[in-house]
Image 1: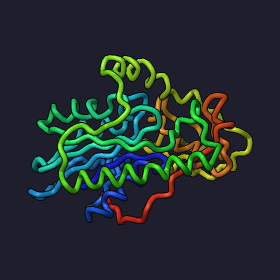
Image 2: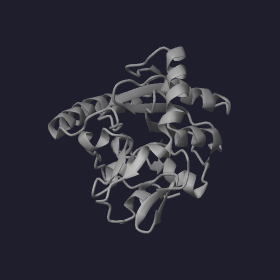
Image 3: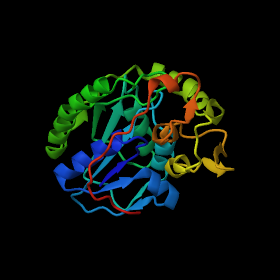
Image 4: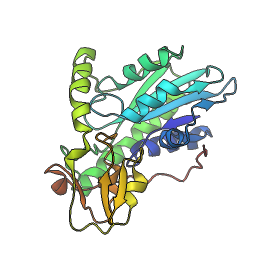
Length: 258
């Protein structure tokens, strides 16, 4: 089983590519959280894969909360973790392992795949050719990860890490601030379609008088609302308008419904 969190499709794509190669099933963490599904049945030879984007050099809040609650009927024979990232993986793999170790679950192998960084308050995705080349190079990385998973490689193959003390400091200092929904604003091009509310993984958006209104002080800050908005009416701070939108169209591997 491959469990993933994905806001704009990068991590979902990686999960589905691996599932296609291994004949496995994929499960969305967003769906699990919304349905309060944390218990999973494993066969003796089945492996557990986890795919997550890197946020502030660490785990997205929704992934962190899910890993704290996951309940396995038995320990899978092989557990791997993949981080998708734009500039650095920080220490996301070790952060995940620290949570799972409290449940006597140990990650066997760590991998990473560099993909377009969707944190557009900083990174510019307006050059579509540049984005295409990043995704093109990612295919070779995914192929390499698939080969290692099939051969049940053990060890840390994650790229672009930073020292643990620095990663913890940055994550603890930056992520909570970044997650404040007060950073969002809505332009008058909004048509009130409600897609942003549908795409929010923690239902932090209500549609009131045909306008999105954030009902929580903090969210995952995945920017799914911004990137999926058909009118590009949702902005975060002052830079996102110039930096464009991004959605990776995933494969059509059948997903396990929870």
